[in-house]
Each structure stands twice: as C-alpha cells, then as structure tokens.
Image (cartoon, rainbow, N blue to C red; front, top):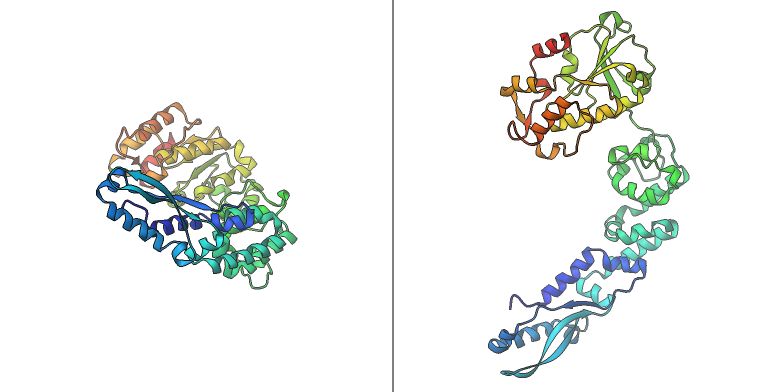
Length: 395
C-alpha cells in the first residue's frame, strides 16, 4: 500500500501549494484556483485481482480522513470499474479540495491567512504599486509581519525623500535604525524598486553592496591607497597615502608610470622607481580607477595572480586601460616558481573568454583553464621571489 496515495500524501501535496505561495497569492490576484485536484496513485489491475482486501482497506482509509467523514478537508472522486475476478467495484481516483476554507482547515493555516489578508490590505492601501510583489512574495510578507509597519515606514520615507544624499545613519524614521535597514537590504531593494519613480533608482548599481548608490544615499567611499616610489616626488614628506577617488583624480604627482597590484604586502614592499607610484589593495574595486582620467595617459602595469581568475581581472582591467602591460604574469615566471604553486578555488575560476590578452598571455590562460600544467594551478603574486620582481622592473 505504500505506493498508493494516502491521507498524508494529500496533506503534503496541499502543503506544497502553500509553500509555493499559491493559496495566499490567490487572495491578492483574485485568480480562483478551486477546486484543487490531485490524481491519486492507485492500485494496479494485478492488485485488484490478488489484493482486493488491501485495496478496499486503502479506499476506506482515504474515506475516513475525507470531508464525508470529518466534515471538512478533501472529497473523493470515485470511478466504477469491473473486474472478471471481483466483479463491479468503486475506487477513488482523485482527491479534491473544493474551497479555500477546506484547504486552510486541513493545513491549520486559517490564522495565517487572516494575518496575510490584513497585511496585504494595509500594504496595498498605502502602496498599490506593490500588488505584483505581494502576489509574488506572499510568504515573505507573512514572515515579515512583526516588523512590517516599520518596513512600510521606511518605504514612505524614501517616497517623500527620493535620492536624499544623506547617510543611512541620518534617516529619522521612528522606531527604525540603520541596522534595521542594513539587515534587510535585499528586501528593501525589491520593495523600493516598485514604489520609487524610475529617476530615483540607479539601476546600474546592483548587489547588496551598492544599496546606497542605487537609492541616492551617501556612502563610505572607497579609498585609493598608493605609494610614491620616487623620493623626489613625495608630498610634503609623505609617500604612503590613502585618498578618495575624487581627490586622487585631482592630484598632479609628476609621474610617468603606474603599477597596480592587488596584494597589500606587495604594494608596501614595492621597490623605489623613478617617476612611479604603486596602487594596491583595491581588490574588487579596480573599477574605481576608471574614474581617474589622468591614469589613461600613464604607462600602466598590472600585477596579479597567475591563475584563470587573475587573467580574468587583467582582461577586465584592459577594458579601461587597453595599453596596460602585465607584470610577472608570464609562463617563465610560473615555471620558475613551481614549488610554490597552489590550487585555484574551483568556484573562482574564470569561465569567460578573455578578449584583451596578448598572444602569450592567452596561451598561458588556455593552459591553466585546460589544466595542462596540473589541476587548477595557481601562483599567488605574493609567492613570487622578490629578486624576480627587481629583475622584471630592471628589464
């Protein structure tokens, strides 16, 4: 009998409809979905012949849990069939939940539906533009019930103050602090995109980290850290500085050459070079450099890890600085440091097709991507011998 649908299977089927948000969404969309029908997994012809007693027990079990027996829940649809051995008999072939009331009583979700209806009514009265969101995310609305009034207060504030230009910490919303919003940035992104006019949303700013820029809030700006490698060009004796991108763009350093490296220690240990600086520690913020016009006139060098990800970053770097040359990202450097190879994380491998690499760089990238030199070979930039760096700079 385990292969035949039982009352728990019917309840599990209905629970899946609830978990998908279908039953709640119907209250908002007005799309009538009742009756809900589940075709039953039934006994086969051989079971009717050889296990007819079990078949009848199965049918009685289904009936005992149906609305005909307990007054609510599912009803059974029967078909009359005939067997040469058993003669004529009736067998259930489908379970039907005919009303929302029956569904909610079976699931014991009546109170949740009442709560959802109240939340949806309050929300749509204030923000009718959220109707699609409520229909698509009914369970999320229900889960946020305890703090929903505060969430609506945040939406109301942003509607009245589009692109406010203040820090999140400066928002004056009763009962709401900056942490409340920060912990729910994904939710607020969904909601604000619906309730704000198009010109109040910077759609180019994507991801949780870009929340402030997307909605016109002031944000902690990324600093550009650099070292001036020529003692004669130090700024009032300062050689290691961190400045805002706008301030960096306004500098006239009297240099000709710029080295960019991700690793902080590499930047700190970089040897002195005439009329040069090294920028370091930007990590995934390399795009910040695209906002510095004078860098496009410099002799640019990029030093990254020798792995597929490193070449992916170099490829992206050249989208802004097509004249940039790589530093210590060649096959000879890789082979000379074989004892220091590591493995690139599988989920960080570059899967795209780099179009801005030189012939030699692309050939090495292909070797790494195809694991021809070993499995997921990686040489981190900080593992490269310092003498190799000096030799490359002197070349």
